[in-house]
Length: 209
Image (cartoon, rainbow, N blue to C red; front, side, top):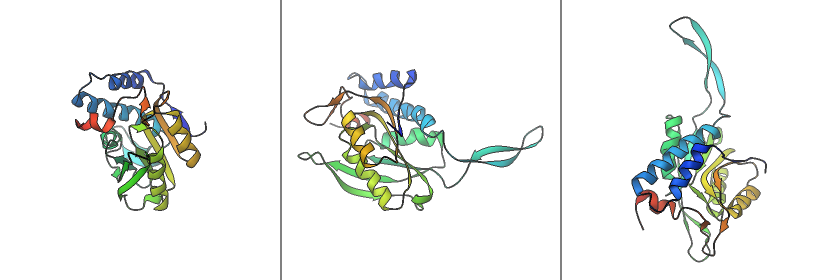
């Protein structure tokens, strides 16, 4: 599937297995999400544009590459996506952060927007949408829709686990978006939860029920 990358790095897989464990507590879960985000972000950002700049080393002057263009935009889907922001900011501390607030209607399972605040000049930035879980794909499609409606063009979507149904829906709705997945799970259950999944990522990150 074009523009879809499913991670196979042993460190990512090991940490996702720890996330799944029901015995993993809030503090450890939160730390693991951030660590996985760093590892996935390293791969997802490998095509950041660079430019040659002049640098003086202790030995001589030289031209050497640095990231160019407008700063990266990291856009978490609230609230669980907040857990992935720190990992990307570890890699690119100067990144701007936007927020998209969505909740899933308990009857239709479709996303409803309650908040959207994006960095200025979003059309000139690489926008990385982060959400630990890609389940039905409704929230991901809606988030990308909002960014495109506000001028975003270069968009990546990063999640830790995904269901095939959500991946298909997002890819069909936005085939131009680069999708990065930590692990592709087997399916959704009748309540639209990912199987085997890891439970509710927001509750496990923030210690709520």
